[in-house]
Amino acid sequence: MTDKIKELILRLDKDRSLSLPEYEELIRDRDSEAAELLAELALKRKKEIFGDAIYTRGLIEISSICKNDCIYCGIRCSNDKAERYRLSEEEILDCSDEGYELGFRTFVLQGGEDPYYTDEILCSIVQNIKAKHPDCAVTLSVGERTRDSYQALYDAGADRYLLRHETADPVHYAKLHPASMSYDNRMRCLRDLKEIGYQVGCGFMVGSPYQTQKELARDLKFIEEFGPAMCGIGPFIPHRNTPFRDEQSGTMELTLYLLSVLRLINPKLLLPATTALGTVDPRGREKGVLAGANVVMPNLSPRSVRKKYELYDNKICTGEESAQCRGCLELRMESVGAYLAVDRGDAPGYTI
Ligand code: 5AD
Ligand code: FES
Image (spheres, rainbow, N blue to C red):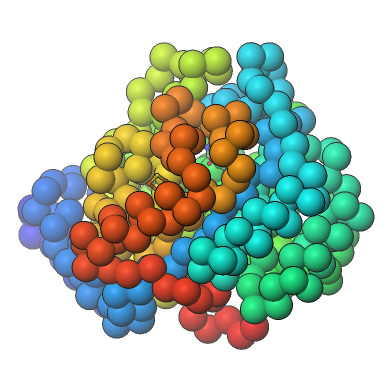
């Protein structure tokens, strides 16, 4: 590690901020020694706030139907080989009941942008989950909607919203998405969600096509300035039925490095050790926790649909039952000195 990189890391830990060129340098000139120092500081900061607790969210993948055509994504509308399904309100409520029994106090309803889920239908689902489980948080992750729609869902009881920004660079954004989607609308959604009062999660893929250190530096600056409650990052993994089928996966090494950097930018940030990280390496999620992550999101979807929610190839956890996923993660977390908290796991500083 050069003296300059060491200085940048120590200054980031002190000031929680670097300039754009400095973030770029921190990524470009990294080595294993720098990664070790970052992880050590990241773990220290994480423990000061969260101790050894890892927050869990039960992920319910409500629909593989999507009207969008993101180039990287396995459930893009032009993948005519994708198997499509949609869960009914009853099925979603059943998943949340099962999740509650297993100790989950947050449910994440995630799906493609499926027009079936009108405000009316989604509001009813949110209201019913909250009525049955008033001590639980409901997180939505169903893509870009109007401000009025976000407001209605918030009024129905949704607490949080996950919408990855995907990349904080408009030119890069345009290379990953069809012309019908826009960077400006993505950012508008994130601003609206924050203003309405949601705990907002954004995030990006590591190693997505055309991504360089410059784009990643912008992502880091964006997180620093936007101040999300959560930031989901995981390696890009190609899907065989997308135009990016021959692209390389993002690496675990760079993902772990960025997790540590994000922890130093905001020690209170909720940072999931993602399924994609567990897909590129069998111990990816454990290593993510050792690099500074503090959230895991095991799958609560009915086993019959799991393989169909295939955003990328070889996704893990598609053959297991919900209880198996929870038990598996419990053991994995114990193996790195952490434990799964039975708790809503709100971002520190947010009141219920
Ligand atoms: N590889 C990794 N992550 C992906 N996502 C979508 N497609 C892929 C892929 N091929 C991520 C996106 C999206 C989230 C739900 O999954 O960042 O926001
Ligand atoms: Fe799903 Fe391990 S977390 S099988």
